[in-house]
Amino acid sequence: MPHSLSPVYSCSTSFEALDIVTADIEKMMGFAGGASPEPFSSLTEQAIAEGPRIFTPGAGYSLVPDIEFDAPLRQFRAGKHLFSPGKTIFNQIRHAEALLFFVTTAGEAVSQRCLELNRAGDTIYSYVLDTLGTVVAEKTLEKMMLMLESQLPSGWHLSESYSPGYCNWDVAQQQMLFSFFPPGFCGVTLSPSSLMHPVKSVSGLIGLGPGLNRKGYHCDICNDKTCIYRRIRNTTP
Image 1: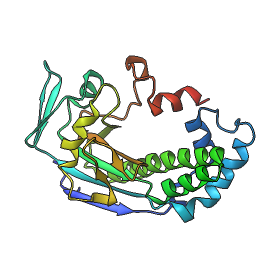
Image 2: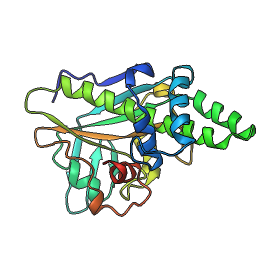
Image 3: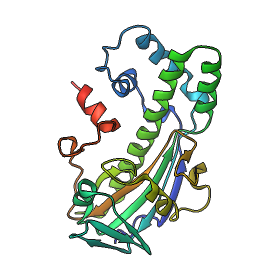
Image 4: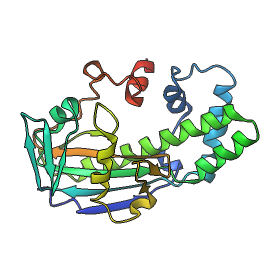
């Protein structure tokens, strides 16, 4: 076990610390970086300028060493819960020695700001800010993963992060995932229908162990056409 990692960890950061650039938003919207048409190119700059006022990024994880993998059924047990993440995710984490269940969030204010913009009829800028909210949650996760990599013992590595709702992993299993967090962990709660609040939040798992590596997302073997990672990969030059 990587004893250098805390069993439960949470932190907050600033919008500025995420080093978000306009290309990050453009790629999430489906444009090539630096190639979005007007008004999007101007609105992405406006959104980044407004970012420090409306985003409160936060992240946290729970480290779970008590795991067991069932290769024939493509399931794993974490604590007392049995997860069925689907073939793609299972194959990427099956050699893990421990798992991190995580949550990251962009905070609640962006949703209120987008609601106000929609009511005022400014739906395009609302869309850009909403997209930036997704970028903030993902960048906050990446920042936490870089921190984790710096604390792992020699020879240990992370897998990519994987979330319920993608690669045929039933989003309802998010209920079990959240059972590893204290109530209101990182300011994020889960509804009975497995929707997170704030909306601009990400949850999932990361594998840890000597036999793992971050190899990128295997979009060619996944049939999820709505996945944001597929969208980013397909618009990256």
